[in-house]
Amino acid sequence: MTGDKEEVLPESYIQLKRDIIGNEANQAALKKSWANLTKRLSILADQVEERQQAVSTCTRDSLTSQCIPEVEYDELVKSPSSDTLDRILECGTVVVRGVVAEKQVRYSAYAPS
Image 1 (cartoon, rainbow, N blue to C red):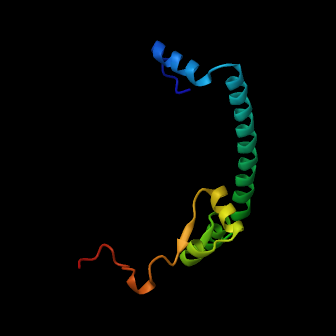
Image 2: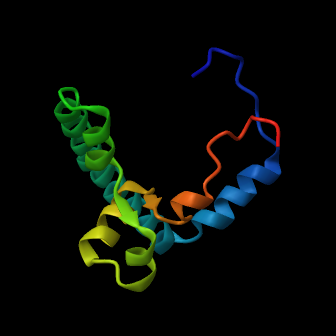
Image 3: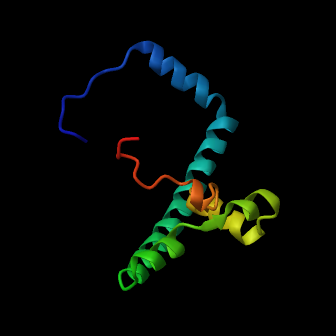
């Protein structure tokens, strides 16, 4: 894909691939998993596109809340809602607020002590 000359891998790589793929049942399972993955990625790509279109008219704060879930530390530790957990799993990241008390936060990190 880069335009570089293709390098032939050592025979040990071919054998490793054969070991991973295994018998026909494993091959079928791998193909089925790959089909499921590509289908799911297609759906997620559409969702990402929709969010990008929606946030093009949003402010920075609403962009964060729409795309990346935010949760207070206490809620996350004590009793996160299933909706919150689902959004975190779907997004793969979360902004956790209230981890450190406001008065303990040092705003001038680069200023000499």
